[in-house]
Image (cartoon, rainbow, N blue to C red; front, side, top):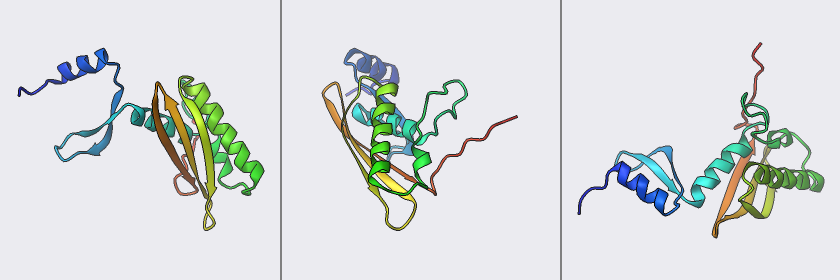
Length: 144
């Protein structure tokens, strides 16, 4: 069987509307790991949710306010605000994605929480998981 070139593979994916991307993890063949379909969307949404709102200079609407909840008291009201933030940001960022369910789990040991969202796009379903903690926060700095 002949080896397919990257161009052939690219053209094949365009014709069947497949969505794919590469991540910075090296696979056993020595190539970057390839993500397909819903996993590409999950990666993109996770990056958006973990980025503090307003940190991208050319797109101030990219990101979320989730990092603001890390040091909040964990109450039912906080949980509802986090769920609303996840749903509204996903709808704004990619309106083709449907959010079917969002759950928030608070850690008892440290300042962190886990978000699990069931999402769907074009008949593809997946689970988006985001962990935010005081240890993986991204900070924005104003450059003057």
